[in-house]
Amino acid sequence: MSAIQPFVQVDKKFGKTVVLVPAPSVGGGRLVLSPIGSLDNDTDDVRKIADAVKAGVARAIDAGSKRPAVFLAQAPPSEDVGPDADYSRWVEVAVLAALDASYTTLVVREHLAATHGAEAVLEKVESIFMVVHGASSDVDLAEAVRRAKAIEQGRRLAVDMGYGDAERMTPYRCAETIKAAVSSLPGITYEEIKDLETIKREYPLLYNSARASFSGNVYLVGKGVTYDTGGISLKVGGAMRGMSRDKLGACGVAGFVAATAVMQETSVDISSILAFERNAVGPASLLPDEVVVSRAGVRVLINDTDAEGRLVMTDAIAECRERIVAARAAGNRTHAAIFTAATLTGHVIRAYGWYGATVANGPARRDGYDRRLALAGLAYGDPFENSVMRREDYQFVAARTDREDVYQSNDKPSTLTNRGHQYPAAFIIKASGLDRHGLASGRESAIPFVHVDIAGSAEDGCDPGLGLCAITGSPVATFAGAFWSSA
Image 1 (cartoon, helix red, strand yellow):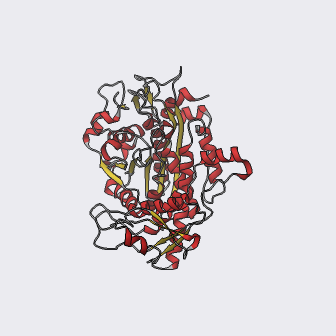
Image 2 (cartoon, rainbow, N blue to C red):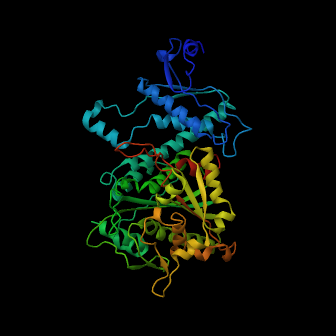
Image 3 (cartoon, rainbow, N blue to C red):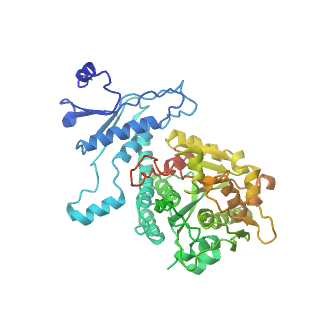
């Protein structure tokens, strides 16, 4: 383009980084160049497109643009790329990146509204225009944008809740936020359980974890710990910092369900249970050495109250198992699988860095559900690693006496425990009764189960100084890619 030629001639590094140049011939009189770089090296993937778009739109907003136009000048290569380079959803990824750059968090919007009243400007931009060179057709482009907008609506619900601190997003206020967001969406039935006796009876592990703080078919269970002190096994040495983010699994599930309703995706029937609690310290706190009987009738020896996430989800998983079994008994043989979403362990970050990981049981691995999530993540720029459960994981939690049936954990942080993000899935399988539905039970009885640990992918891992990392909205887009027929 003529606008950039003078700069190319005088600066050999021009175009290697994000730059803004005056350009009288384009709208606004300025042009932002945000280079992608190579897309065919061994480790290149669609995130390079996302990074370039997000950086470019952010620079345009910083320059004062209220209606930025994104021109995607060249389609990515379709062959001779790395084994993990899936560019089939590059347009959706670009749209999501542009929207991410323009996002203002709920807590900031509320602050602006409180301080500026009706004059508050709550959004960074008025609109974003996308011009795509190399799109297969206008119809395909319109469908890609529709898909991305649905995912973004769900992702923003997840991230809005995620940024809320422990008081802004208590368990009840999380429920209020979700209810307000989904009440007008088609195809969603919302149920909220607040009665303590019902929770105590139906979800005993959740109740006991939270008791100090109380004043085909896809089944999704989200961990929603709105603040995690560690309980009596108190987090010390600054480890409590950022624990208002321990609800991001439930936030992500809520966002995905909302996105599915916005998209009006009818190919999948979703049932979700979001287990919100605050893992607090008080006179009624759960204690190590207690034996608690799960919904599935399994005696659980508590060794660490800071391993509360697996307790929060296990009874809900048991309920999903019961629903599947009951549906099959009634003659409904529709294929069904159970998935979690949880910021469960620090070990997954130690193992993989800022990536999520799946841990699947035998039926799920046989049917490729964990790989399906990984492939969807590659397409949408949210890669997941596939971890594998081994016999040692089951052996680690197996009871050694007749006084209990399973050990909840050891008394060490996951980061100091061998296979610290794999063995919790073995506990969940045993304590929820899913061990009765493994490969040995036969195809008629088997229930695929995939535990999705998003402790790495839920935040971007960038250095925030003394603040907290940015929230990504994972795994909303990955779940959309895995479960929507249109994605």
